[in-house]
Image (tube, rainbow, N blue to C red):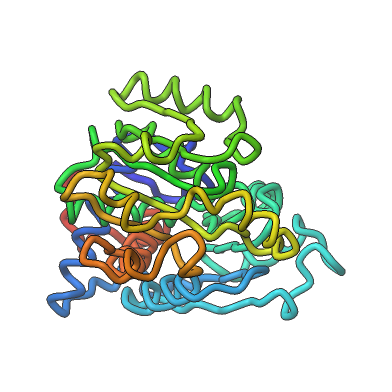
Amino acid sequence: MTLHNRDFLTLKDFTQKEITYLLNLAAKLKKDKKAGITHGTLKGKNVALIFEKPSTRTRCAFTVACADEGGYSEYLGKNEIQLGHKESVEDTARVLSRMFDGIEFRGFSHEKVETLAKYSDVPVWNGLTDDYHPTQILADFLTIQEKLGRLAGVKMVFAGDGRNNMANSLMIGCAKMGLHFVIAAPETLQPEESLRLDCQALADATGGSITVTEDLESACQDADVLYTDVWCSMGEEDKMAERVQLLAPYQINAGIMKKAKDTAIFLHCLPAVKGNEVTKDVFESPQSVVFDEAENRMHTIKAVMVATIGNLDTLQMEE
C-alpha cells in the first residue's frame, strides 16, 4: 500500500484499510523510537507548519516527529506570513510548495486547508480546523488499541458539544473502523443530520453504529471509552457562560464513569478545563489515559508524514 503524495484533510478521504495501515505504521514507529531506533525516512525533507491557532500537542508532535526521522520543520505563526491577508491562500500554497515537501495547517476555516491542498504541489496535512481534527483521531485509535486490544466493536461515548470538530471527526473515524459511537449532547449541540446519515451508512458497512441522544447516563451504560472535550472551542470564548449552563449535565464525573464498564478508559484531546467537562478525580484516575493519548499524537503524526512524503525503503511494513 502507498499513501505517497496524499493530502490528509479528513478521515472521510481514507478507507478502513488505509487507516489501519497508518495505525500499524504509527505503532511500529513508536516501538522503534522506544528502542532508540530511527529510520531517516524524512532525511532531506522540509516541512512548513502553519499555525493560525496556538497549540501544544500539534506543534510539538510535528516538530519532534519530523526531527526524529531526519527532517526539518519551520514554524509559521499567524503574524509571520501573509496567509489570506496581503497574499492569497492560493498563492501562499504555490510559494510554499516550491520550498517545502509538506505543509501542515492548523486554523479556523476548513475551506482554507482545502484551498491550500488544491493549489499545493506537495501534501497538506490538517492539524485542526473548525470542522475536523483527523490527526487527533489517529492518536485516539492507537491509544484504544493499546489499552483495549481492538477497535471494532468498541463502544465509545462522546459527551458535550456534539457538533464540534472532535465529535465530527470521531463519528467519521468510528464509522470507518466499526466502533459503536454515541454522542450525548443537548439538542442544540447535536451534529449535522447530513453528516450523521453519511456516517451511519459507513457504519452499516463496517458493523459499527451511530447514536445521538440527550441522555448521558443511558448512553454510558456498558461503554468501553468515555470521551469529552472543552465546552468552548478556540474563538468561542464569549459563549462560555451559556455553554457551562447548557452542558453541565454532560460532565464526565465519577458517577458517570461507574455507568461504563469496569475496564472503561477516559479520553480527552486536551487541554482540559477540570471542573467543567471532566472532574479532577476522573482526570487523575487510573482509568484516565489522556497522557498516553497525548504522546500518541506524535507517533501518529509521524506516521502520516512518513507515509505521505517519507522514504519507506528502510521500513518493512505489513499491509
